[in-house]
Length: 161
Image (cartoon, rainbow, N blue to C red; front, side, top):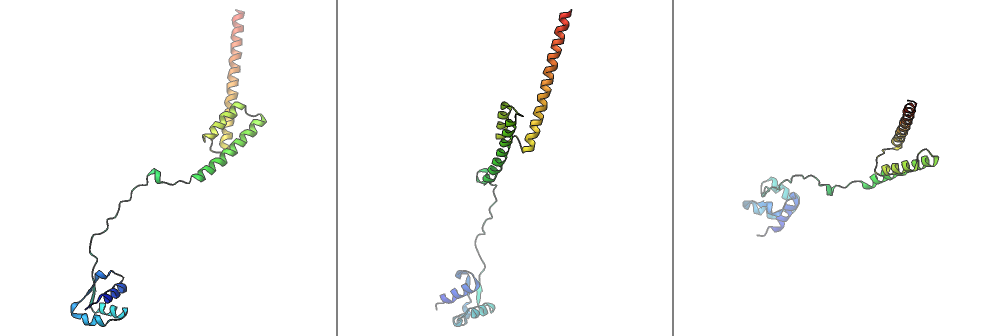
């Protein structure tokens, strides 16, 4: 008595493998007569066909590992785009200041290097730094002027004695 086709039909009906289908030996005559999926379902309700439970090893749940630095994909293009926009803006501003004579060639050169190394966050930050630089320059000039003035006075006083 070959019930391979019936086993296959039952497996398709219950969405399981054909190894899990078990026919009760005492009711094989009923199973032989089953033709449709509905007949198979009715026999399953009547306990003539039994679907075995899954047996075997459980699949082990893998531990999630941290992503290593090499496998992280960064949006480099976007970073480069923002860098290029800022750099071009600041260099153009420096060029304008240099052409107006507000900063010297040496200062311009040092600032370009700082722009290259991302020292300035924005145009406003660059303007602030230029303002501070001018203040320090004025203070230096003042101190050097005062120093020269005091040196001249002390020489004059020594000469009078």
